[in-house]
Length: 80
Ligand code: FES
Image 1 (cartoon, helix red, strand yellow):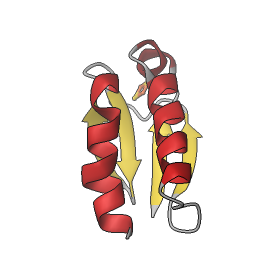
Image 2: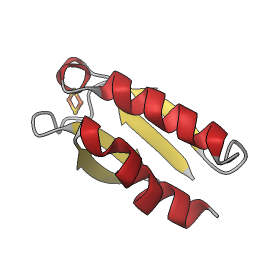
Image 3: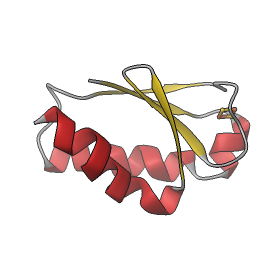
């Protein structure tokens, strides 16, 4: 599973660093290193409402506060 987090300037201001840190920690915690490939990418062209995250090319817009809940629902649940 390929998870890409936007680190462009708007997403950065909306907390993409927090999302990256959270996702990294959760991947380690659940030992998903072999199943989840995390990467960053500059502006994905959907700035504004939250942090842009793509999972296998499907785009999601999330708030930094919901990073863990999103991870559990969209990544953990599908990666195991
Ligand atoms: S800065 Fe993230 S979509 Fe533009």
